Structures are given as C-alpha cells and as structure tokens.
Image (cartoon, rainbow, N blue to C red; front, top):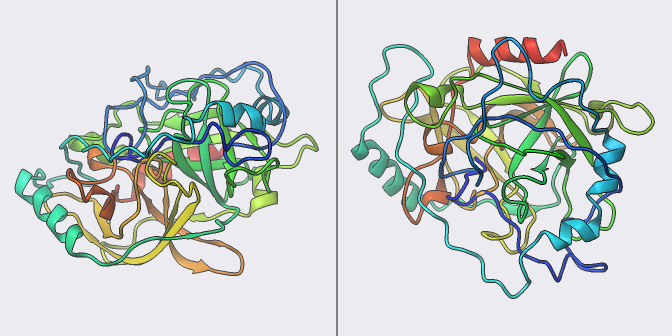
Length: 355
C-alpha cells in the first residue's frame, strides 16, 4: 500500500536532500522514461496518483521497445534530484488520511466486508501495542519512485522475488511509479550512493481487473522486471530474493518490512515488525496488527521463515488489497491487509518470470 494517502508514500526534506543532507540520494544516470502502468484506484494505504490504463492481459506494460536502463536510472536519480523532489525540511509531516472503504475476496463465495467489520478491525488495531521498529533494512526490500505522480515521496515498497532470470520484483497492484521508474533496494535516505544501486523498471505485470474494493482487491498485486546493472548483472544476484509461496492459511507468523514515506515518518527509514496474521472478517484476505505502517508501505512483503542472516524468506502476502491495504481512521497505520496468495498470483508470476 503505498497506502496512498493513508499514508504510505511521501517525501519531506528538500533541504536535507541537498548535497551533504539526507534524502533521495542515490546513484547516477539518466535518459528516457518508461510508463509503468499499474492502474490505481484512489486509495488509502498506498500511492497518490491518477488512474492509468491497465496493462493488457496478454502483454506487459510498458512497451518492451522503450529504452530505459539501470545506468539511465542511476544517472537520472542523483542525490540532488531526489533531494530537490522532497518538500522543505520545515514542512510538518501530514496526518494520515483515511483510506476508502472497500472489500476484497481471494476466493469465491466470500461474504462482503461490512462497515462494522472494518470498524471492528480499526478498534482491534487501536488496542494492539505492537509497533514496527526502524532498522537498516534488507537488500531484498526497497522503494519505488518515478517522475510521474507524487515525486515528493517514494511511491511504494517492493521486494525482490526469486525468479529464473533474477530480475523480478513484487509490489501492490495499485502502485503506479510512472515514467523513469526505478527500484532502490535497501534504500538509505540521505546517502550519496545507495548500497545496492538504482535499478530501472522495465515491464510490469498485473491483472487489468485489479483494484482496492470488491473482488478486485483480491488481485491487488503486481510484478515488474528490472534491467540489469551496467555490468550486466541481474538484480537478484546482488540482493538475494524471497521465494514466492502460496498463502498456507490465515494464521501465520510473519516479518513485515516496509518504507513509510517521510511525510508520515520523518526518520525516512525502513521499518520491520514480527507479528501474526489472521483472517479479515467477511473476506478471504489476511490482516495483521502492528503500528507504523503508514503511506509508502503498500507492497511491503509478508515473510515467513525469515532468515536474519540472509535477509530473505518466503513471501506469502503483501500490504494491499481492501482499501489499498488497511482500514479507515486515525489508527489506520496499526492494521494492514493482504490479498490471499493463490493460483492467480502464481499464474501471474509464471508469466512475468518468463519475460
């Protein structure tokens, strides 16, 4: 969820991002842009952007003929440019905005989510004491950003998934980086050089019928391929990758890693939380309780069997789905949703991994 306005995306540190400061400062390179068409629905836990035409079911988006390399991405997204895109340092973080009400079903015959169920989830979240903690991040998880939309913040969180070509990332279906889109693994705000570089996003794969309400919320996931680095090395070779796994059930112990945007979290650092999932009442989606997952965290992977040493695990879900990934209200950062990973996500993965 970029958790759009709910709060999972934004940036705030134009001053800090100047040379010697802290903000989007990363690698080096520039050139043409490529439109990443992950059609969005206005939502709450994710991105701030206008809806775009969804990719066709039989082909990825953008056009594979477009030229946008990781060298271009690194050259374009310099530390100064990232810094210039951020709001002034004196700007106060915005309060999270409420996501739209909605619902999703990951399997047939699910009862529609009700307002009372959403309110109940919000109350439950408010009672939870679990809160995500800041940490240095892991190589297999990073941020998405681009020229289009809200360039004042990283749009969403994404994670590297193991694939035959080692070039695949996973995020929420409602995330929409736009042109000159890039993925920054283990993003470090304010650093002149990113630890794992800046990688150009090429093609994206998502279901045209995805959304953040109704049955469409069960399809709120997407894959994207990234270009190799200047030396021809694939992303996964540098960062490692998580193993895409069908959701084994509603109750799972997971580690969730994401990047709230600076508008909601002035530290502008990665956060993580170890928690247990359960079923979101009235749907076939998952829910988890842990504070601190504001706008910018849409797409954050839910990892089981997380290996602290390798920094990878099995990804069985991500922040997204109903309302873009969470309930309404002032405590919306404390509870998050995920589509149930089944045949649909595995089929989409198979298609994307062949690209």
